[in-house]
Figure 1 (spheres, rainbow, N blue to C red):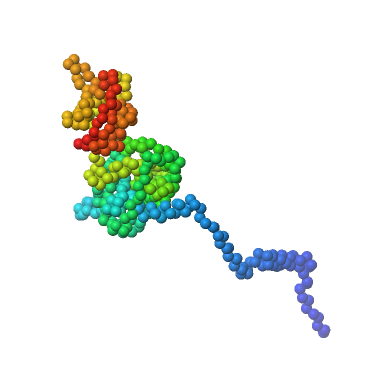
Figure 2 (tube, helix red, strand yellow):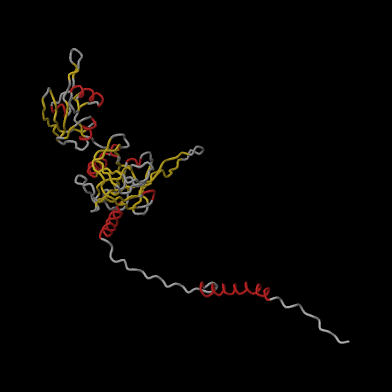
Length: 382
């Protein structure tokens, strides 16, 4: 019996074959595209390095800023204040960091100027110059009414670089200024700006006004306090002392104690440890002064009393007296000091604080309906 062939599987229909091959073809096409066009699966050649474009010379203002910072920054110091703490259980006393601030070298004897409020409440302080070893600082003197204080450190003379001293009397609004300090503990930071206003009055930590303060928009932040404000010649023109800001950070309104005040106050702090204030030798009271001068229809400072043996007594000033019927006989009313008009006792104190003991001033006084000029030699206040 003849055999017969066993039939194999029937060939797939053409449509089924196309359905199987179509995805394979699409995959090959896509793979080829990714391989050749996008470079997937191959190592890409490293891009050509970008060449550095020459910048040319620095601008003149940039050079001036760099040179000013280079010369002035070695004079700026970093101040760390310390506070004593007593362990409740062991009664051991330790000194812990309390805060930081800025300052600057005043002279080659090691005197350092800063703000009074930087040291307020501290038991000790350390001063670092240009990031070098910290030196223990001795408190020399302070004037809370000017927010100024002086420390002294035993640093070698070769690391002491006193700042050049300028003047604040001829400053102009719009003049370029530079502030160097340690904001937020960042060592020796430079900010720039202009004199925004002059003749401002701010309240010191003692509650008394500081006159003729410089306002600037150079960024001043916590930690800048006590640092120098410089003019474009690198001269000291002020000490950065306060900012006006709801957030506590720079808002473009900063204040600096003018250098003319600093140059008058710091030597007294070094010599006496305090301000030796000039005095006329009179007694006056702001509340009483307002009442009496208003009744008299005159502006000035009413002399309520004259200290025996004082400069005012030697000049013949008259104080108020009580008449036999109990009424008050007004004394002299000081209307001007060296031509500067007075409206209050604070005005008189502000003018006298800008003078020196032994200096001669001319008072313009009202007495019995007459105006008199009276010269007085100022004496030291007790």
